[in-house]
View 1 (cartoon, rainbow, N blue to C red):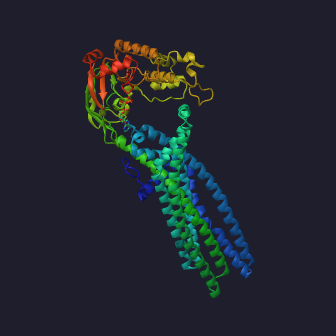
View 2: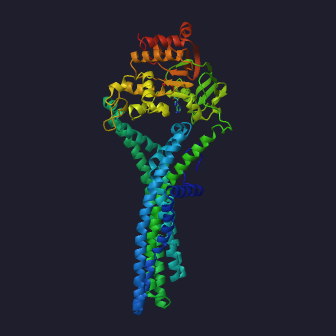
View 3: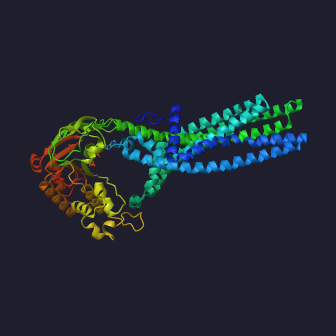
Length: 618
Ligand SMILES: Nc1ncnc2c1ncn2[C@@H]1O[C@H](COP(=O)(O)OP(=O)(O)OP(=O)(O)O)[C@@H](O)[C@H]1O
């Protein structure tokens, strides 16, 4: 597979890639249904080879008719019946088995895909620009993974049919065995055509991804109101069509060249076919061949034509399917590479971190992979146990990025994050995450029941009504069950029959309650947790939260990102982030009396202006 960290390959899968993809498909089929897989893999080539049986029987029948040999004619008829019955009955049986098996393979690979994509310890495959197009191709071509196995089996069947046809031609005239060679230009044209079309797919993947995202945007319920207010429907359509034209033009141009080459290849095969028939006719004229040989040449040639065009059609399918399997293997390699960056297993694994220790940033810098602009620069900071640290700063200052690093969605480019004096990388990311909980700025609206949407914040207690009610009380959502038609068991989300949609603030309360489900986390990250809450709810929530933290025996370190200064001022420690560096650090009172940036932001914020981006009143 291509370098998992590198850009798109832009070329055809290598032989090694194809061998790996074939092995992946066969082993998956065997794992999915061993009996069916073995039957299909044995019967498909046998059925392919039997396809020449009918042609052989017709040669026998023709020669028997010329000789007026009734017995031989009867034997030929029996052979014809058997060949037709075996080829068609067994062929249908193999096709049915193959179709069921390819569905099973598709499902198994879907399951593996879910495990792979959610198991990667960081977000590199979702955010790295070089990976986005591949992930998009994998998502779009995922459906081909199951049919990749089908394509493999059908190719096996066709290739065995081809081999049998060559053997039959050899029995007529040694020179006739060269007929399949005349199919090579058509096969080569088809292979290079599939490769070219694959390259076009990769080249146009970005435009196609953008086109799809415009389509999704135009159809999304979230964007519906703004699209109407700003009357952007026509503009969205124009941009969508422009991208579509770009993709279509590239595909049409490539398709034209591919078709021209294919036509030339078929002309060569036609010439070879004609030569083989002339050879058979000449043999009859010279008395070295029989009329049956001419019939057999015609039938085998026609069959070869069908088989070769089948192989060509299948080759396109197979190459496309192999490409999809290649993207799967790329993700699998990427997951392995990311896994290898985790600390090696210890003989005695480090226990999950417990609250009650310092969290320190030591000369921490970070640049997003695939970019060259540092977003965090040389940050050093000690956060004592139980401290609520508020991060403030203008949009783009790097606050969310720091939150992502704390959750190990990325690792620092240089410097370290330490907990209890240990580099966070001493723990596998999954172990570190057991010690933390978080509510993100772009939190997910999980359309489950209210109980589950909150309860999954602490899976072992997800169904425990008391634990969920406690989480709701902590997250400011105590009144939600009473407001909803079926209390905790209300299905959330408009997409479900009987589902109830929530207001933006109510969804936020669900997300916050989910984050506050866990007992005793060492770290709590709250990134704009109250942006959707009304000021009274927000104030009540944080007053309750800070009081609870101060009286708890094991309060977590809380990292709070907020543009609301009424909330920020409640924090024990405030850090002002500006273009990736900490410019001010202290308590609310210390920073106010320093009269610097924080004091300025606070004055604006408490006058009702959330950030300095908002124009100041004159
Ligand atoms: N996945 C990413 N890849 C590359 N750059 C990114 C990525 N995510 C964020 N950035 C860049 O990192 C910088 C900091 O972004 P970040 O989201 O951390 O800011 P922030 O302080 O949280 O802003 P806000 O207050 O608007 O939420 C921005 O310039 C942003 O463009």
